[in-house]
Amino acid sequence: MKKSFIVSMLLATLSMPSFATEVDIKTTLGTIRVDLNEEAAPKTVDNFLSYVDEGFYNDVIFHRVIQGFMIQGGGFKADLDRKQTHHAIAYEGNNGLYNDRGTIAMARTQDPNSATSQFFINQVDNAFLNHGARGSAGYTVFGKVTAGMDVVDKIGATPTRNVGPYQNVPVTPVIIESISRVN
Image (cartoon, rainbow, N blue to C red; front, top):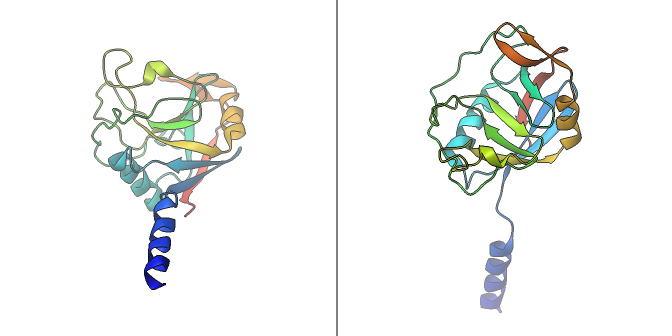
């Protein structure tokens, strides 16, 4: 009796879904819930969560918004002052995840190993951003929106303008009030 109970408990445990980390991105236009994929992008998720835990994302903006493409934030205050970041992380874009609608990925420069705090959420499938799509590194996807795509689309529809060297800046700032762990 004891042996069969133990075996059934072990089987039940094995069939349970793996624990995932979710975050809520609370903005002035609503909340976006994101399920982070630690298995596919462990260094990227760890980096993102270090900024989350420090409160780094409190009161930064979505500074680059292109309707029908993506919304990008995580590096600038409302006055477009750039926040000081940690060192860049290694590229993890060859992880089997794709820049599909609702995925979150790291923004970077032309150097694949240059991502720090900035991220973007894909409004549409952006296959050209995937690893190897243009014969080179893509953009590291590290999670997926599970609630709040209507908020992403609302942010994406925000009127934009150019401000100095920055393009596609929302006319009315879309502020990330906070990003916090859900579980």
